[in-house]
Image (cartoon, rainbow, N blue to C red; front, top):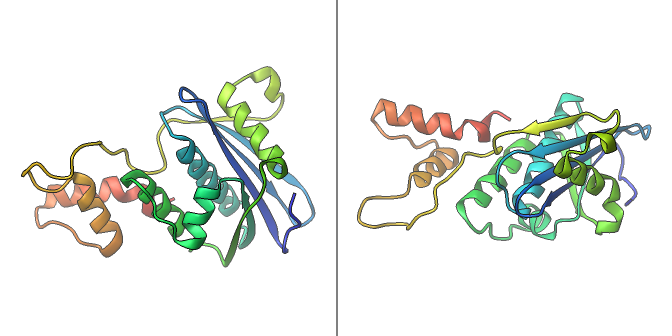
Length: 201
């Protein structure tokens, strides 16, 4: 493992085989005490989605532990570069995941996210696979969590325009980015509800 800068260390990994998905988290205290978490993702997720879910769930665990400063390690080049270097997030769901992570990072005093080799991330990788296979005999005393919904709103895939106006995701992104809401109260309430997971992690 990469030597920590100081404070807490968070290692995360996601795993997917196209049919089942899992997320693994290792939160390590300054005294080297480890908190491990394996999560079964009970919804369809791409490989990148599982990496983002592992990162978001890791941040949630760190916040529960009152962590203020954290060194975060992931072996996903795409996720790390999108967050650190502003690489383009392709697709509306990935953009929502990126926005979600950016918002939760603001709740920490300091976060440093680094890319590591897969071989340096064995603990989180094994936990992700345990969440994936859900083998209780392998888990032993380690609790297995099941997450039934994505951390970001579900979206529909369709054409951008068929003369019927913008995709419904456009209004959610407009609200998240700039607080823009339609005048119609029921529609405004619906957009706020769907955007809530990005604001209230």
